[in-house]
Amino acid sequence: MPVPARRLPSWAWVTGLTAAALVLVAVLAVKADEGPEPTASASPKPSASAGVKPSASPGKSEQPTAVPDGSGTGRRIVYSLAQRRVWLVDASDAPRRTFTVWPGTVNPEPGNYTVGTRREAATGSDGVEIEHIVYFAVASGVNVAFSNAVDGSSPPPPASGATTGGVRMKAADGDAVWKFGTAGTTVAVVK
Image (cartoon, rainbow, N blue to C red; front, side, top):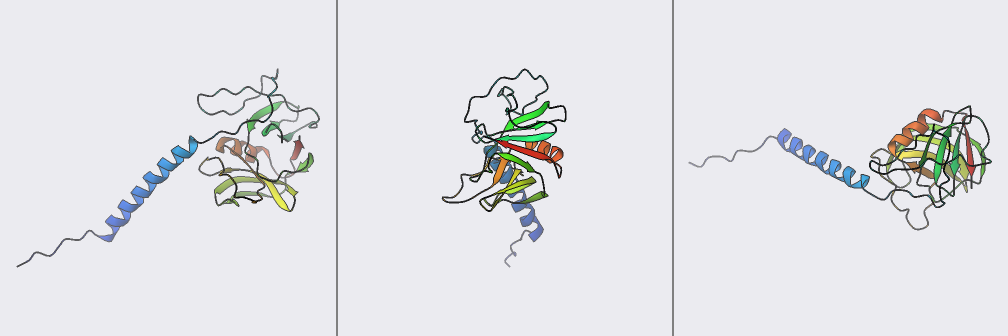
């Protein structure tokens, strides 16, 4: 008399597939973290300010740069289009943090803007899950906002002809902007 084949219960299959998916996501996250870093298009200027604490990738040193002239005074976020860099400046005009960013394809004109809407999380126009979204301008009909990818990755190259207004940054920098850039905070955009 034949012995019936023994089947694995469905919960065992689901558990195994879920574990495999988590391992795959972890591997992809590590690979994404090893991707290209943003670079400034202009040479950074040294600063005498010891209060600046720029974020950097482990093992890489990044020199603090001075807040650009003409960016205003008081508590503000300064975004340099040419340097692809952001500064968080306190009320005494001391830079508290600076870091490089990956700009979108649409940039606001130089000038002063105000943080308006903020969203904790959403899906970016490139299909990437993003968080700490701080909207501050509209350019060519596109909302411009600071954000970071939930998985910490750099944004993929935009599709040909795509218009994106996301100014992406590393996760730790996105968290800092989220805490600093409350509604009504000034954002000074400079060349």
